[in-house]
Amino acid sequence: MALIDPNYLFPADPALRTVARDLYDGVRDLPIVSPHGHTDPRWYAENAAFPDPAQLLIVPDHYIFRMLFSQGHRLEDFGVATLDSAPVETDGRTIWRRFAKSYDLFRGTPTRSWLDYTFQTLFGLDVPLAERTADHYYDTIAEALATDAFRPRALFERFRIEVIATTDGALDDLSAHRAIRDSGWQGRVVPTYRPDAVVDPDFEGFAANLDRLADVSGADTGTWNGYLDAHRRRRAAFQALGATATDHGHPTAETANLSVAEAARLFDRVRRGAADAGERALFRAQMLTEMARMSAEDGLVMQIHPGSLRNHSAAMFARFGRDKGFDIPTRTDYVRALQPLLDAVGTDPRASVILFTLDETSYARELAPLAGVYPALKLGPAWWFHDSPEGMRRFREATTETAGFYNTVGFNDDTRAFPSIPARHDVARRVDCTFLARLVTEHRLREAEAHELAHDLAYGLAKKAYRL
Image 1 (tube, rainbow, N blue to C red):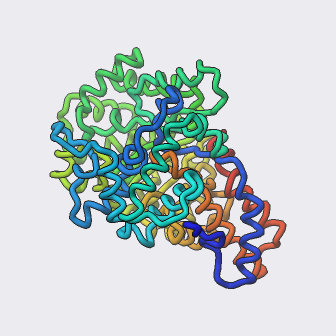
Image 2: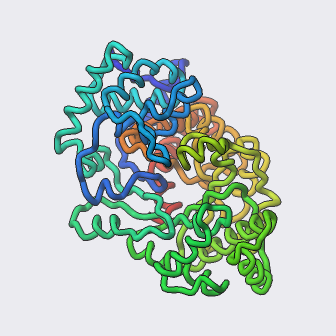
């Protein structure tokens, strides 16, 4: 029994399915370009064996434990560590059995599809995961993980990954990336500059983070000009190790374009901890524009991931910390919010800004029209909660008529779950080929053009947009 049918995600209509499958057959085995994600660079630097199946596939994955928590399960029972070091389940087999018993909760979700694809293609499993098959799954996966063929570098090569970008904080020492570079291994792993901890005054430990930024950069972060210079130095350090992009996870898309004197006064209040909520929001807005200016100067592609109300549950944040499934999408304005940034760099041919959204209502109304006219803007793929077959379809349907295909950037998997990367790219390729097949069968696109587009969407656009 196959866990993933060969016609998975293809149309039921035979004529449409034939075209979609033909397009897919031309791109299914292309190398993977993963220009934005959250895998740990230490995996590739150390090339140590992955831990047990639960630690690899369940414990780090917030898609999994947010669903389990919504159904009354405790995170501690699935190995999720607490900030106060309270006891949590550490036995991998116990965690796996609990997960298998609740696997039916994931029916119809992308998580179920990603996992089934991984179980089938990576571990050769062909029976459904359930309580009765939990030990069979655990033993099969654990046995594989004990072999050299399942170490990070071997999987990187097996997955046909051409390049993968990690996401690294501005204060990161980048030692893992230096170790990869110096190891002689040919896999291409590059960092991405993520400065949230030193541009968001509401980030925990912000003042201390600025002191550390001074230490790691050698610049004086006590002044506005010194603070900006610290960012430039850190960006250069990232570029020296192969970085081609930055990433910004702001709560909103608000930008500002203050004068130098106004920005300096604002920074002084923020640095002293004297800024009120409005001033802190204004500082975040100004820093998006400053980062865009720096991108035009140094060539790093800028990604903006706004619109998540992070850590929605104060109690869960206090107990478990960040990234525990309680980040919730909010409505996001782009037209007015981005205008100051676009006044600064929107028509600058050197600038490249990739926009993402969790607010799908903005696709046709705001994002596609903006990207369809400003040279500096491109649209990132369906993101996070919408990284799904239906989300990808909605993205193409809402944006293509206004922005076209070439104002988008292909696909990125944006994941911490390393084994699921091939599954996520396969979903995107199937969905895009189905969308293109519809245009072909409706005589809106020539079949030869569809083959070119399928290649671009699966591979070429990401390389070009991220300057890889």
